[in-house]
Amino acid sequence: MNLATENANISIADNGELVSINCSDALTYHTGNAWFGVAIAFRALEVAANAFKNANQTWDRNQLTIVSAHPGPGVKDTIEYITHCISNQRFQLTEECKSSNACNSNMRFAWWISNDTHTAFINLRHNFIPTLFNELLDRLGTIDEKNSDQQDFKKLKQDLANNILQQPLPENFRCDLYRGSIKPEQLLTENLD
Image (cartoon, rainbow, N blue to C red; front, top):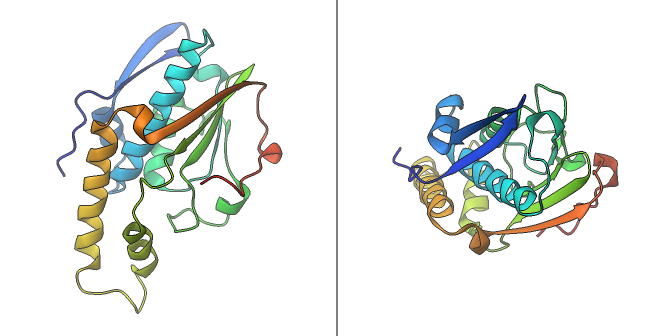
């Protein structure tokens, strides 16, 4: 795996100390092969960190709550590594993700990240994920899987991870910061694309 991680960094407060984390650290923490999930979650959290800091809002592990519309292990490991929301029991999946701990074509690349007073809604640009990604994802492990699907999917994930890590954040993510801390039951997830 050859990912362009050198310039991706996030700083977050933890018990009064500022902790700096780079994407390579998150990749090391995640022991699986969902490095595209690691890259995309890292960049989404980078967007959130910037939004909170630019609005002079707290970006602190002890105050963050995250609701994710993406159930993948790379995404969840990255969220845990950076924010500790999962171990602090301040993490939840959206209703449509709760039945699966695996990636599937119904998942969304969207997150609601709240501190005690504000929520950042972050989602990936609609056309960033090519149709082929979901086609391969749905075919893998089924009787429809083709001989080249595993290798094609691995290459596509690496290309997408490099793209998300190298391109400017505003080109790939939308972020809306609004007043109020979100609760999972308040979410309307039908129109995330």
